[in-house]
Picture 1: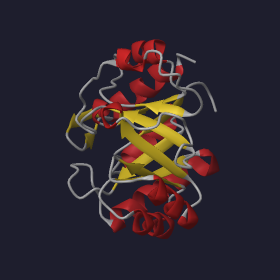
Picture 2: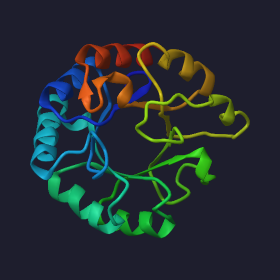
Picture 3: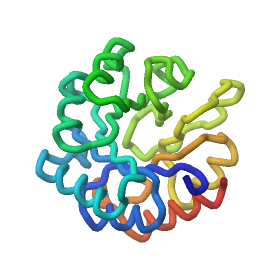
Picture 4: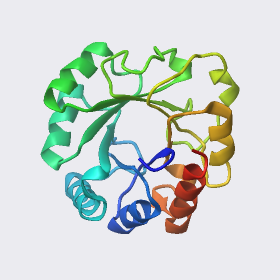
Length: 209
């Protein structure tokens, strides 16, 4: 991995995948939550995965993000569509869900918010990585990073929520995450990625490690 680990999430087009990979992103995310403006159907998800495979090769993590599907069903969907990783997002999912999903797809990430008072040890539910998001995931709202003070976070955890090309370097300096995740912070409108912003975000994040 070259510098800070960077995931660009909510991708819906081949062009956005190309921009993320060309900039040096380590992971791309596809959302299949029914209520998200970034949600895609199965055919579009397959196309994004295919573009990621072509552009990024085996070193790129391609992540399916869900928050409203049963964990076992989500794992089966991720495998069927060719994803590397399943990210279960939110308080709907407990430890048993993570363990069950892991039997279907070996790599599971846990995404949560501090407002849910989750366990903050990476791997507490058997997950490979932990993502800490804003209280309103996908809203683009910046949250108070001082909440992380003295939390003892370590290992492979990603910071998300309100990050942009202009503030990600400062956020990294304050929170010291292993990686960062961006979605709305590189959009020109909800669900519409700004290709130049993707490049600027990855460059700014990578400059901090």
